[in-house]
Image 1 (cartoon, rainbow, N blue to C red):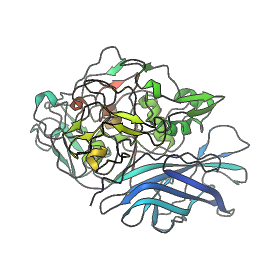
Image 2: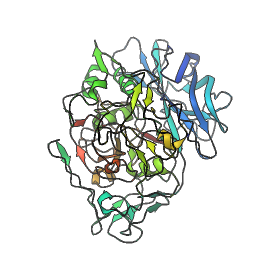
Image 3: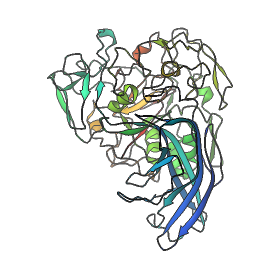
Length: 530
């Protein structure tokens, strides 16, 4: 049975120099280097980790993606990414506490920890140990090394066939939605094999004849020409492009300001200059919208934020890609986005991430405990189980700030998936709040994406440098906002109907690439499960 009531409040974490610091309900504490094997050049990094509202059921579970950064106290430069031990088919040397499982990907860039049996509630995994292969990182000794441990809540999306497109028949609401051929029906993804895009033939992935063109004047767009395929012209989506059939982990929440601050404080001044650049900000609907809650500031090279629990907005793709690379995650494809929303369920025409076509657009939300971890909805919350709560301005445009991630699920009146605005898997705010940035199949650079994960290391000047990521015009350096479109709708866009952007299948701006940074641009990342 899928669970929809287990998602409550955000979880993120920062750890500084082996000192326990908690953030909301995910905590890592009691960090220590428990043992060192000088001959094998490994060390056991021990810590406790806990978070509330965790779950595992027969289909999926939530997990914490844990990665470690280190730095010699006598050295200058950026914090480095630790290599965790990985042994194919055998014990990696990690110690999973009772009730937990640890899974290490082959690249050793981090580890997932999650419940080993079905259940829900608060996790508390004591004396967790990860084996750091410091010799692999070129270190002869770690006697003068400081470490930082980071954790991000993720949700497991299992392998299996699913559908793209929702069968929408209203011509005024079909924004390049996917379809099977030119039939108007949803397209079933049954493998990771190559797919023919367009051409109109049965078995191809169509886009309602490329009707997702969207032009916004004056905002510095690189290309607003829509997909490069339609019912007449065909392209090929290669087998290596992540199509969502295979299992993956998705961030439970949108990337937060604290997570970006963590990256900045592990970076050099040159890297910080690129990551924190604000020169391209574009006040699309007035400078006071959202900017009043952009809380990141810098003093003497150290970054802090007064809004750690809010999405990191004003986030163009260059900065988003930097975080994905630094955290050893990867971009989400637009196909994976739809799988993350609806899972294996049959599509519903005009549906939102919570599984139906009903949204509470009364726009009468008021907030309590603003800027605190307990920030919530004071009034206007819909608990009828019919209309999904979603953070987006509608007709009256009363709301003037972005909301913290997970805000609807934390409400005491939450009755499940619809009222919390959760996807079928328990992923939050895939409709509304900040935009999701996803790799578009409608651009040749997007189709070159092969799903490589970041390696935890940025260029000396702060750019992501993972091969085949979109936006990399110069070698592997991600320096442009191109081939990564928008899904899920954003808070700023004033509309009386969220369908303009927020439908699961809406591709209205999925092939629009903006060189400017808009107030509600956000990001979320994934990692292939193995």
